[in-house]
Image 1 (cartoon, rainbow, N blue to C red):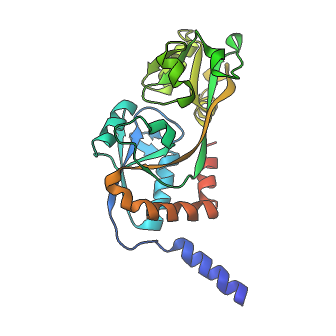
Image 2: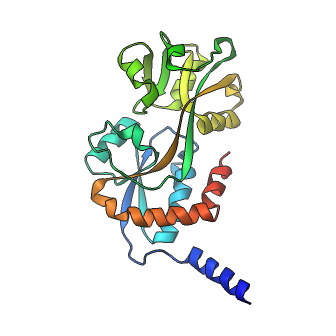
Image 3: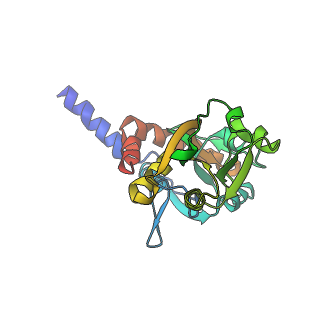
Length: 245
């Protein structure tokens, strides 16, 4: 009976909101980029981030309103205080921003890789392996390990609005190499056979990801942390990520 009682308490704890007070927070989503974190179907947002905030909302009673912007515009909106939360980032990626933000606890890992066609295969053991090469990245994305080489023109950064557009450039041989999220390139390969000739190369960045919160709304971070802890402990976050593999 004691074991059953403890299990019932655990179930009640999982389904009981952390806070009865409700507030609305805006969450930035990158427009036209970043699947499977954000997938737009029939004008509706779906994907990992949408599912994650649905769970956080259930646990906190807070409402989260999504705002879709191109990456560079989204970052400016955060700087100006018109967006409250940016999901799935690491503080190293935003340390040069006007408003670096405050952060939740980490809840997952992000792995960025270099991709290319088989005939352009390359090993990337250090930054020097890419000297003199053009690398496609999404405008607004940050790769701290390579930023100095980009600034010194030792590696040439080719920016575009989305991963999809960069992949088209790669397919048409306009660029030979792209930095892209491992989950993202695997998502594209699962969705379309046209990307099966693209090879996933070495890891170029790996970091814990967190929720970035505007300092004006930093008071909500303890609630976000409590919700994230519950979702990690119950395996809910892993289930969300696995859903889009």
